[in-house]
Length: 219
Image (cartoon, rainbow, N blue to C red; front, side, top):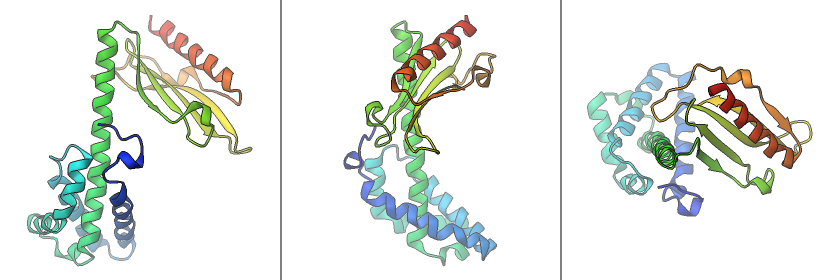
């Protein structure tokens, strides 16, 4: 499942706390390296204990059992030094890590599903990622990733702020994304160069031109 807005994300209320837990724990590295190593092991143990959680709904529910997870992490690692820095922070940091992993796993599943659907339909390209609104400028920045199935190269089209004017800049580039098996043709993505324009309509022309160049190179 994908989560298109904070209202659809069952961890939306919790994630700010989880991220803040990470920020509070990790500066310990500069003052107490031994305790920091202990914290890292404990946080990783909490995240590993959540490895079977494959969706954000279940992850939010597991937060009710955070004390048990931290106690088990201490038992497994024996790291009492890190535990003294705070049970809540250790739990929050572990949940923050697992949340990022869940989102990455879901994104990878969607990518594979879209590639499979494109292959089944006999398409040469698969749109494996989209976000934002192209017509919103910088309010909801747009990004689209289109994968060329034959080469594993992708066209990445993004709207970014121009650092000098802070107006929308429309960028098109090639990237070696790899197919569903991670395979990429022996082509240098960097050799295709990037195109950047302030013209919303030229952006579409640049995208199509980059697709044509990749197709020609892979022929």
